Length: 130
Image 1 (cartoon, helix red, strand yellow):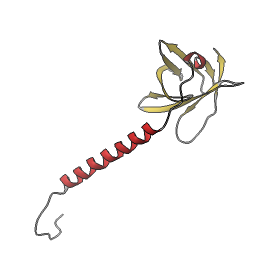
Image 2 (spheres, rainbow, N blue to C red; image 1 turned 90 degrees about the horizontal axis):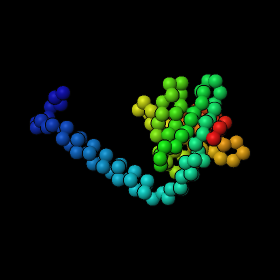
Image 3 (cartoon, rainbow, N blue to C red; image 1 turned 90 degrees about the vertical axis):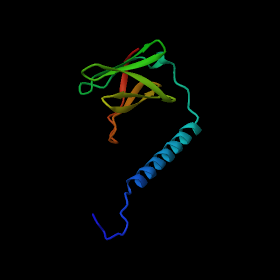
């Protein structure tokens, strides 16, 4: 759109440079934030391995160990995903382009909790078999 300016100018290069600078600053802040937090060690993989049940609606989740890695198989299709340790008893896995947090709970009733997002908690999956 012409606004009556004497000199026509292409602002796209300026906007691109600002976007790149902003992205770089954001990455640097995230890196600094992530490196300053001391992470807790992971529980032994054998302690999280087992079969967990959530009833008829969600079914079972199976956590198994292969070498030095833990995997979770969840859902009616039986998809198997590698668990990545994040902090303490918390792991993550990715499925269909989405990330999910998994927290293992120890004690009288060992269980796991999968965060499906959307700020809705469906409760724990109880461990029924080692």
